[in-house]
Image 1 (tube, one colour):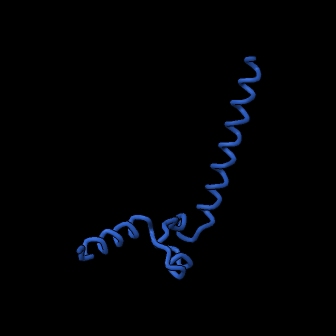
Image 2 (image 1 turned 135 degrees about the horizontal axis):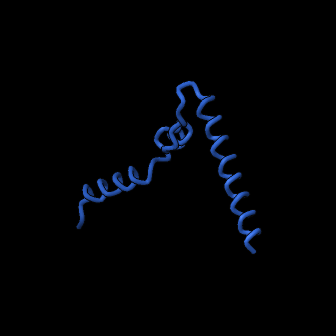
Image 3 (image 1 turned 120 degrees about the vertical axis):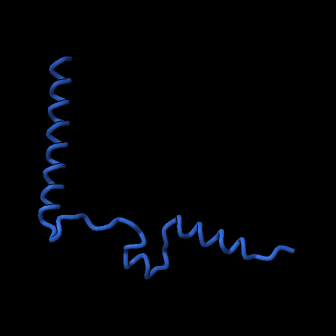
Length: 71
C-alpha cells in the first residue's frame, strides 16, 4: 500500500515536471517569451465571424434593451 502511493506520487511528479518543461520550451521558443492572448477579442478569426466576448455581448444587449421604447 505504501509503495503504491509513493509510486503514484512519483509518476504524478514526473508528469507535472514534464508538462512544466514543455511549457518552458514554448516560452523560450517564442520571440518575446510570452504566450499569445487567449481572449476572444484578440482573435482575428473570431472577429471575422462576428463572435464577441460574452461580457461584450451582454453589454450590447443591455444597451439595446435600455434604448427600446416600451408601449
